[in-house]
Amino acid sequence: MHTFPPPIMARVATPNTVFLVTGANCRLGLVLVRILALRDDTIVFAAARKPSDSSDLLTLAGRFPKKVQLVTYVPGDREYNRKTINDIRKSAGRLDVVIANAEAPKGRENAPYDLDAVEPVLLLREAYPLLKWTPPAKPKFIIVASYDEAILGHRVYNFNDADTVEMPDVALNYKAVHDDYPDLTCFPVCANFVNTSGTSFTPSDEGVRQLQHITAEESATGILKLVGKATRETHNGYFWSFNGSKLPW
Image (cartoon, rainbow, N blue to C red; front, side, top):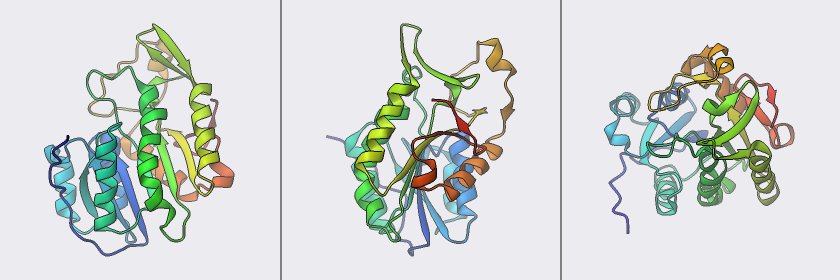
């Protein structure tokens, strides 16, 4: 049985939009949280495995005490998933948008399939009841895919080169989500090549090294713009780039 640390959060007034951003302690996650905190009509729950260990997250929470709430989240752990959503329910009473941005911890860098397809679904199962009953009942669940495996526009998951799972397998999972959650906007987005802290990825392919790298600010800004205009009818079923263009599965 888990012993949960006390959440760093407080009861907040219900804003127009409530976000949950996982992987909030990585560079992209931090920028997503900061941009959202600057909005007048938004609060953001910044989720990480050990949020109190991140001085950057603590600084943001201190700067925006009514806008940034820190919660503990462990990808793939159902107890923590449930605890995270319950903390949000108690504090804000609602949830509008989830941006699943968790990165692989040390020892699991070669398991992007879990991060992109399996663990987000576990989180969705816990989050959906709160997402569903939040007016105006147009919930969004966005997965920031493993951009460090995006090679020249063709995404392939490599498990130490011993096994390969291609994107059609992941696409089937998103198709199931689309069918099972009839009011949900849900799709993966590629953040492009961002130098994020905590990742062990080193591009070894010459083509990858020649790809344009962008800042976390550029990526986060593009992702939030995409999320803002996304609808179930126009965006579900596609794999998106941070810049709003469609990518091949």
